[in-house]
Image 1 (cartoon, rainbow, N blue to C red):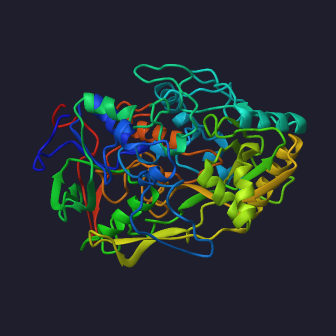
Image 2 (image 1 turned 30 degrees about the horizontal axis):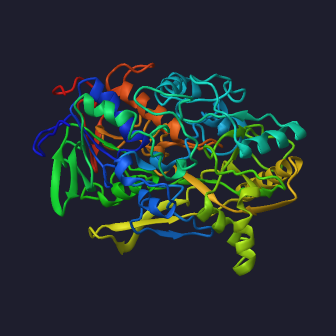
Image 3 (image 1 turned 120 degrees about the vertical axis):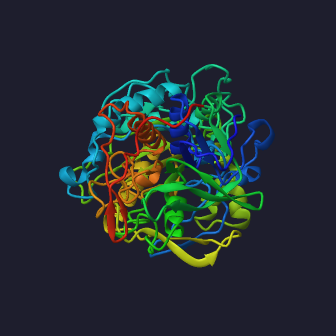
Length: 543
């Protein structure tokens, strides 16, 4: 791996090596940019660091302190954050659906949420690119913008068969895939062996994640990754209004990396937290927070799980957790009392997660043991409900500090009435599917998954933090390229869209965007406006 000195003014320093940061790094390294990426977690070695054990995989989650609050506080950890190079995609289920065209215009079409400053057509070519790079396997997709996938669908195991049987009985369209797992060998990667540990990290590297897809390519083209590096503040020059680099702590030593440009990709909790912790004389309320937009509109998806018991063994742990899905309930149905909708997927909780599911129903002692010993007879479905963006669902700084002395994030969340109606509707749909497949008992647990928002893109600085190209309104050479920029979240898993948005931003920065580079803009210092050079252009050196 090539290395740079802190004093070198690299072309770009990226904070975070997850879905957005790794994609941006790889694209720009391929264009000859001198790129350094910093990640607070380790540089994982799947062979050394990952095990086929749930409890032994908890180190993959972000376990630094955070505060949760609001009327419906959301637990943070295993299903909505990651730690280390590869980010949460290291332990995501591998499910990679696209957003629908309607997701980009929910306000104009359905009267809720907000319209994006870009449309589906702006991301379509990047969806196709990323689907080929991961690669994605699945049946032809009939929903949203109908499309096919580079690899054919995987064989279906017991859990998927249950879903397909119930869907056929109810007249619901269900398809196999799409998953970021090659159907067979792919390059240097082994084929899937259906061990069922996608959510704990794929030890055989069959499942795609930036750690094994975009990171190696970025390193081969001259990028540097500094793992175990906690970024504490973005530095902005008080005279020019431009970012000059980032302060970080590595191995107990405080350091500063100079850079011509800065990109934040720490995801929806840590990116707003870093911006708020980067307050200065010119930005006393937090960097890029002149209009109190940083940290706002943070969204989760309602993710109830419904399990059904069958007389025959299902063995739902055999195979990738997401195998079969339906998006028949995705769009707004005028006959329903709620707006927008939900998707339904197979999920396959392993024993510890299954014990949590059962104990949440109030089963303990001998009763709990009976359910656990009956594990092979259960199938499980999960929904993703599109919770709407609300300004008071946000990240602020808490009085508590972490081991670096930095204020930790306080994530306040409360559901709206539309959100609650969606959860009920999704639960009823899953119970119907399982009963139609022959289940003689169903149980549901309320859950929440994924995070997006917190530094959303918008048409102007009064309604968002970044523009359509993910460039901040306040600092012209500061970009945000993670899930925090998404204005709405749809009922789809967000990883593919985050990668597509980052790939589009990379094209903007190199002047090759399908739509052209972003125009120059004035950089703002509080109380003044000064003309600055465009943040895009030719890099100062080559990797």
